[in-house]
Image (cartoon, rainbow, N blue to C red; front, side, top):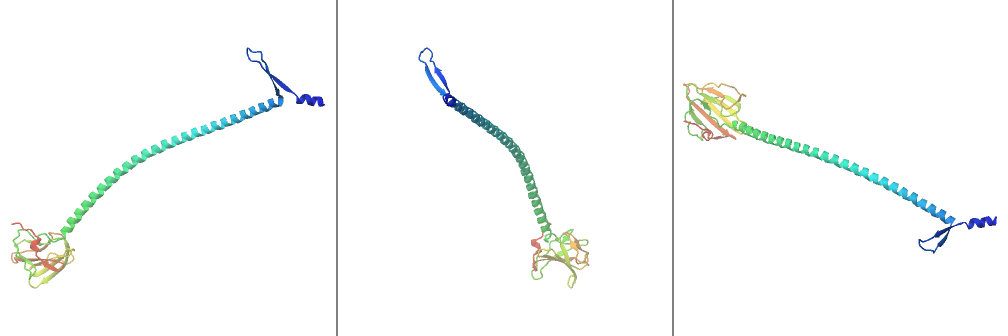
Length: 238
């Protein structure tokens, strides 16, 4: 039994190395256990190497897939950016159009409002037809006088509301028009008025119809309750 163990323990392999062209032979003794350990170590290294390369290959594949995904995402973002840029340019164009429209609309409304506001200032002539030169403004009486003929119409000098139609001791009747902007125009004539209190009038609306029997008509403008010279508002040609 001891001999078998001894043989087993001393089991070795002889390795001869014979260089070419030389008679010097080198002999090495290699134990079986060493060979087994060496083979096992090589096998282990092979397995570890294969595992590493498999893992490395997987990581490379993952990186490749990630790069492809990022490339696709970049293309999508670029495409979206192009679309957004086009939409932004379209919105800018629409905004410019809308801005131009609003500015034009505001301008037109301002002009309309200005024209509308001007129509409420009694700058028109208070009579229609042939117009004579009125008298100078009498600050004491607060009015000017016109000579009128048969068929002449006494008319509103601006847009407004008739607030009074009353009798007047000296002139027969008096019509007062409130223009809503601190201006008041007052018309006095002998014949009966053509309209009543509360009537909305426009510039040129007839108030009296004149006859040859009553040739005198007086006209007054008040601003904030004070009489002012109507001649500074009117333009009379001829």
